[in-house]
Image 1 (cartoon, rainbow, N blue to C red):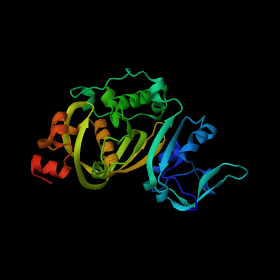
Image 2: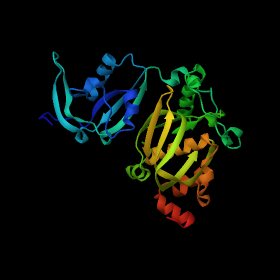
Image 3: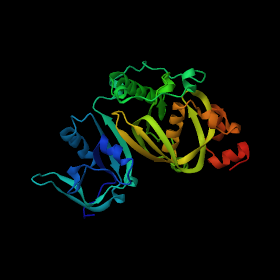
Image 4: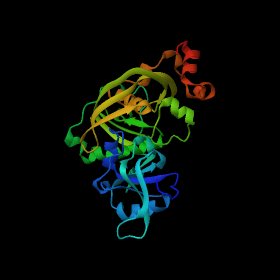
Length: 311
């Protein structure tokens, strides 16, 4: 680091494609513009950079970076031929652990183009929740109907609010789900650590094939938008690999651990006609009112031991 006091946080703007590629790496995937050095911005510089370079981008991702966790030599300097000074990282990289927060931005957010009343989330007992969903063809994925449906599902998921929504939950038995888990402000640091929970940007999962990469199960309470006011402890694999298509019908590989892995398993279960109550430890099933009143602040091992005598 140079002699200038580095801010507590710096910011990096990525294309949505590079952020998606980052999900499969231990470091942030960068563009060719960062080959000589990595461009970083302060909070005060961010709006100017977005306006100058990203105004026409349909999507982009803003990363909030802890500079103490990056690797390389940081310099505060002017760009060639310029007068404003910026933070540049030489001979280094941004480890994923340095990303404090990732915000996916749309030039025109789904909420601006989709009616908030377009979709209804179906409840347990609806036949679509117990069917094996069919795969989508490339032509279907790229069709206006499915592209609109994806945007509608994002709006419905955020409105609910939830961290995932599968197409069978809105009565459509097709292999499509949307996932996003960015807001963790309601959790304490200990709760985030216990859940192994990190920010998960919005992504679309189509025709997924799930592979367990770490079978040793982790247990925690789950709920579901289609099984309202009900929770239970569900053992899930700690790490998974998902081979699927994205919203552009491109093949992608998602490797996920912790809470992200749990969300993927939950949503992919929906695509196979399985609900969380089918996998839950029966002794732990309860109303959300009792969960909040009696169990939500207990460590999961203590809750499981009290409810069913197991660790």
